[in-house]
Image 1 (cartoon, one colour):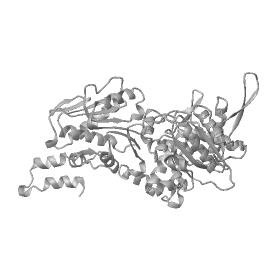
Image 2: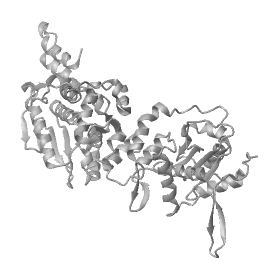
Image 3: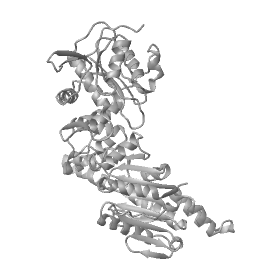
Image 4: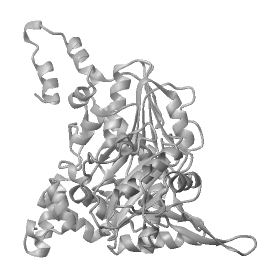
Length: 537
């Protein structure tokens, strides 16, 4: 029995006197979804007032939300609507409860309040309470509960409040003062309460940084992504209308045989041909870039339209990401691999085992192994064709131990040519690999001392002149199909790698995988091998 049907069942079976009306209300009041689907009515897209039935996306969010939640979504999925209904549920069923709703502009906040007020007006009289405030910034009741509606400005809107629930709408447009408001809201949350940040993507801004932090578990937010093709109810009438429009323009409906690669991917995900015709008509009007921003299929696609100076082509990255699970299979860690690599196998991914007689190239960007938000030590392995064979990534291993891991990776891949960044922990790693493990197949470069004498140094010096060259070589190979990237972590870093004030770097998070791969490419292009690698001892 559905939740709405259960609510009707409770109220319609009064004979026998086995349960009172008060008890029925108490049963419903224990379940927010049951309460919403029993009592709430909302205007639909044709302005008809209908019983509120949660979409699968709304229901999933309500059932799985944690303390802190962030939602990346397509347009018009009804996340704000369910947040309003949940706020009414909390304030009408509990005394001394405050809910908070924030939007990016005054007009948007007024629109939220008007919709909130409309939903309240359509509630049955027996669940309403006497209002003590109704002034477009707050809806308050005689049980000392209230819903506050505000804009994201400089003023702390929740000072002195204890919040049971907070909802921030279109956070992608809240670039100014967002951090200040988030700190205040988080501090105001009561035990057992929750907050939801939701938005469509608006470029690589503060909302994007929060989303990336949630996905990589670098903050405490639980990420929810709702792609457009998961919703079959919100635009159902429009799907039908646009498919008829497509037929009128093309003389027939779309067939499976006519699908391009992206449409085939969507079709395999369960998207109907009717929905794909709707998509084609939408793209005809707004362009593919505009459609992807408003109706993304993946989180990466949502952020394709960046205002920043991206070094790597975002669309190329996206195309690789949507195919990577199908074509880039992570292999099992082999039994014959060295003990130290097996001990740290959680940090190692292999996409191609070494083949006897083939040459391999390794880039290494070392760090101090301090954990937390600190830099990562990364090893990237490519073969002579530019295929990414393996990746080792961690920020929890000290340089002297990481040097042994690098050495064993080089031996495993047929005595690979190493290109090690000299900065930071790189000097320690170079000296350990060279002096302790006697490994000589390592890139070297020439520099001049104060006397003008040429000095050959081990490793690789990334400078203002060498960095653009190595990154540009990486970009060219990636975008022209001269290499195959298999790591999602590397692709994520490439997406955030930009030119900022003339400096190539990550605009948020880390770029250690990017730098390690660029170093591997330096070795691959150089292809000069030094001596024969020896096993320690």
